Image (cartoon, rainbow, N blue to C red):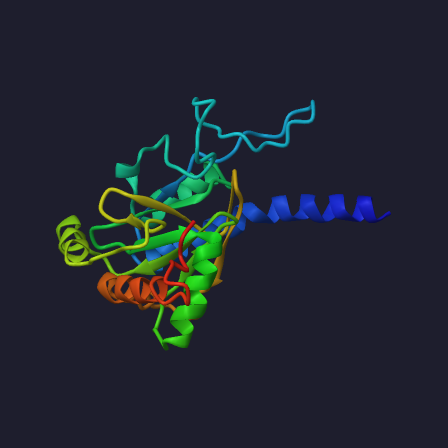
Length: 227
């Protein structure tokens, strides 16, 4: 009986996921003016035990299954409501991909364990954070838009930056909730505050400064934010 109920819940979730994806995409694009596009997604589950965890792109060795643009490409990202509706009407369960940089949010990401440690450390430092996206493998702190030149200057003056950090800026992308990718569910660890306006985002310099401080404050002199 529990197995049957579990199957019914999963089917209900799959049926509802499409409209949820569309509504989230419309919020990002139309209300917040974040350029988005549908990600490639995962293969459909097969009849011989295939759980659908492989990427739907042609690359059998894809290292980010489901979690990247393919067709359309990243340059197609838009805030146009009609385009967003058309995309998700045709692909209702497609992941929502944010094209970072320009006027759109950027992000700083860490491995999941390091990300959890970082958030705890930043909370103790009373650091004001914006939304945080979490997957089972990486956590991403959204930050205000920055240019590659600004990032280069910022990193140049640092004696040491945690090697686990990744930067999602101009020309980059990030999968936003709700989504299912090869590593699992994409969710909000720190959700945007309710309201119609775009979420507040901290400057990348403030976030990197705080992460560097959190990384170098380990009692043994090592890094708290290592892999």
